Image (cartoon, rainbow, N blue to C red; front, side, top):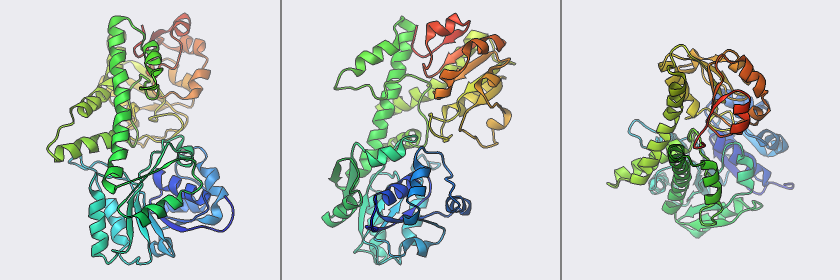
Length: 431
């Protein structure tokens, strides 16, 4: 986009949601100030470095540097802003509810910003949060400032494209002027705008992630049944996905879902239901299936090797999905912890993931290539379907492993070919 800035926007939070939102709004022609309270994060952004890995994001920030400001200062962020976007994280609290302390910190910081026209929340929050924020704004003398829920539906690894070419833009607002303002901010985005009430908009994000998680857990249940009956889950999933009523998206068996959204949002929705006195039985089962899936992978190796005590196991891929460096709720963390608990030596490879030097990762060894991680190993697990794994010289890997046992947790490789190379090849739901 070129030309004069259309509107001034303050974005609170320089994480995945905030950076993608701010950069994309700048791409649309708006003047954007992104504020965070972490000095190192702002220092990196000001120096031209992006503290997270997200394809296309760095280039977009550079391309729009004249319209993007990164700051620690509240007044600088709010200077002349018409809209304040709340993009802070809402991690699970000790009770299982979403921790909204960061959201409330931002709302409180807006008390003197009488020039604002609207406050929009992108953070994933429980249904009813908007009503509480509305009351807080009213009490702070900001009754004239509109409120909107504008949930994000971007996936890590494709977030920039998801923002610019979304399936839908959900705008929840209690008045037409605010709905029109938030809709106007998205002019130039290739996707339909769906306007609704605030509570419904808050529910859409939670319901969407819960349904996607359900599809993954469902196909993993079917995969387990396929293993017991001799059916091939890949064939089953392909045929099921051809039904236009069902679709093939997320019908991919594997080790299970992780990341910053599915685990947190599923638990938050279940807790929201519990707080109303209603038990979401289906969602509880979805979460249970996902938790068991990682442990089943470890059990498969244990059954094959006889014992994991003293075994060397290579984890191939650490991040919760390819195309990101995000380790939040990654299945690899559970796998590493369980393998260590069984007495195994854990070796790791990932092209992007850099886990913190805490347990279980402080007790593992990192390698620069998959081949080095597998050298002398008794078994390997494909944890993340990085494309680099398809380029591995698997024949050589089989020859240098102490015992060439491979559990393909993402069904990335072809079974007959891997067995022909000498592997004891295990996968998910395939005979």
